[in-house]
Every structure is written in C-alpha cells, then in structure tokens.
Image 1 (cartoon, rainbow, N blue to C red):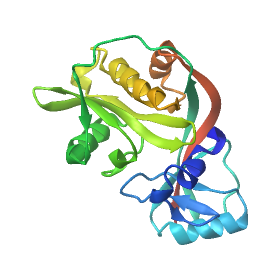
Image 2 (image 1 turned 90 degrees about the horizontal axis):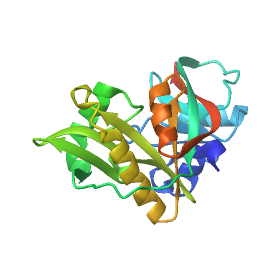
Image 3 (image 1 turned 180 degrees about the vertical axis):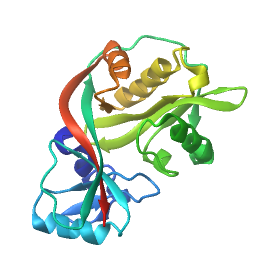
Image 4 (image 1 turned 90 degrees about the vertical axis):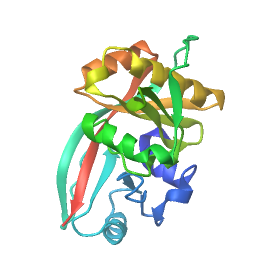
Length: 222
C-alpha cells in the first residue's frame, strides 16, 4: 500500500477528494498538488493529460523517473525517504497545542510558504487533523495529517517559524499527531527530503525508520 501511497489514498480513504479515472488521479489543486498514475503506460499519461491543465504542475512520488511522453516537463526532483513509525510514546504535556481548522487556513498557508515543508494548499487541512502552537495568538508551529489509506496515515506539514525554532515544538506536535493516529489503529508514516538530515535525525529519535527511498517529481504540462 505504501509503495503507491498517493494512488491508494485517492482510491480508498480520500476517494471523496479524487479527480480522474482508473488511470490517473489527483487531489483538487486547492487541496494539494499531489497526483498519481496507475503505471507508466500510454493510457495513464493520456488520462493525466486530460486531468492536468496546460501550465499546471502536479507532484508525484515515484521510485524512478520514467521516460516521459511529449508535452511534459520535469520542474523539480527531490529525493525522499519514506519513513514508518514503530516507536513508543511518552506522556508529554500537550497544553500548548491547539487544534486547527479551515478558519486557520490563511495562517497555515503563510507558515508553510515561509518554511517550505512541502506542498500545502488552502484546503489541505481538510485531509485530516492539524495541530498548532500559538505564541500571543500567532501561529508559530504546526503539524498534521495528509495522505490516508487503510491502516496508515501520513504525518505532514511539520514546520516551525524560524524565530521559534529550538523550543522542541516540532517534537511535541509530531508526538501529538502520532498519538491521534495510533489511537484510531493506524500506523504513522511520513516523507522527508533526503538532504534534510537534521529532520531525519529527529524522526529517528521519535521512532521512525526509513522504509524506502523515492523521488518527489514535479511535472508541468506544457
């Protein structure tokens, strides 16, 4: 299931968000730019061409970059580590944490635009629970849930405002998100850029282990 987590999320737990058909699927752009194809066949790319508008970019998680048909340009390639949690939780205090909602969308978007944790849209918070920490009313850190498929939920959008780093907010929020995921019987997983060794070290300390290496590929339709 996790080898093709975007496709499987759009085919199961997040099917209500899915646009597309049996060959190509995507989330609405306002939710997230993530998309998936069934395979690298001509019918899959044909369906994707109908799904993505000219000039628009979609992001895929692939094991390798295939030979692309005409009409597509690779805008970005980011080597990823997919990590799965198998640790244990402590009983740290969560009094600082607040649950975020669509009413907080503008603040969440501003924080992700500043910190660049990965693709995040105005409606991404509709995919799952998002938690935050505020300082004098200002949102300074957050983390939440993105992809969801049977038995698994992705931890995503982990970010802290640069002025508030070093306070342990990310660890606190990740632990809180893990707790909520495991309480409903799912296994947490996440994706992190391989160059982000500092974050990988934190995730490992929290109980995550690398499962596979992939590539986040941003494709623009010409």
